[in-house]
Image 1 (cartoon, helix red, strand yellow):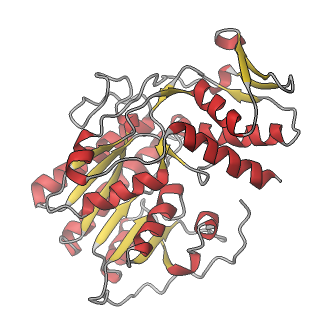
Image 2 (cartoon, rainbow, N blue to C red; image 1 turned 180 degrees about the vertical axis):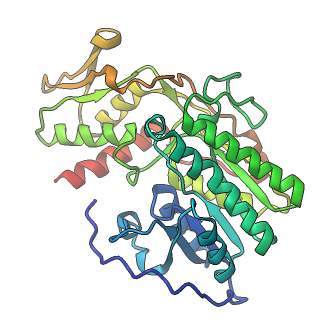
Length: 358
């Protein structure tokens, strides 16, 4: 989606305390998919919303622009690898709630950048927690954990008590950040909660992620393109939900009297192959799947065009084959339930990409 507005200047570092009329929240990763949807939700609830962005010559604000809220949030330069930067920010911008959504979030890239991934996704969380403990111990903290921590799953479905067995540097760093959040909560009495979120997608998802790769590729084919989508393990199964539903769960966690950790998931697991078919249906394609393994392909029976091919370059070094979450605790304690199912999600994304290609 092409940005249509000019990015605002980064805010003055000194901001007065919030008025008694509403809450103030800070979101790291506010320009990402989850950060943008969370900002939208908090604004709808009357929050004053601040967010952290990496220092760039031209900040990436397209998602905030797409949701029409760019001029309603205050952006601050923030680098989770720099302790003094975090210290000054927390000191100068007091908030009621702090949501840490920033991360090196692409699992595949974590094998190429394991040290950077570990620093941002792991040590970055320690830096935030220690600054909050020192300067703002009453601030409520949310840590974005992930279903990738389960990795080589030890139980099906996966709940809060399921042992972790990460299968990537990304997952391993997230296990550390999860447990260090629990440690600070138990050691210092901080209101710190972790959301163990299963895969959640939207039209705002980055194009490097498989769901957007699928829906954008299908949109191009539906518009007359001829290049098949190159995918890896079509049998890998994920529990996919809509990001707009999941950010409400994040907010609900920080409204509880007692902090805790919660799985957010639909409880339905779907192969990548089926996600492709659901998205294709929304664009009036009907796919026939033929072959096995590296020879598997999908063809649109209406046009006869090849739509999907398997490319071994997109297989992970250590694959996570099956993820499906048990969100019973979130349903019971938070009153949270996902509203969009995987077929509706795939269709939503495919139609948005089709419109964007036009």
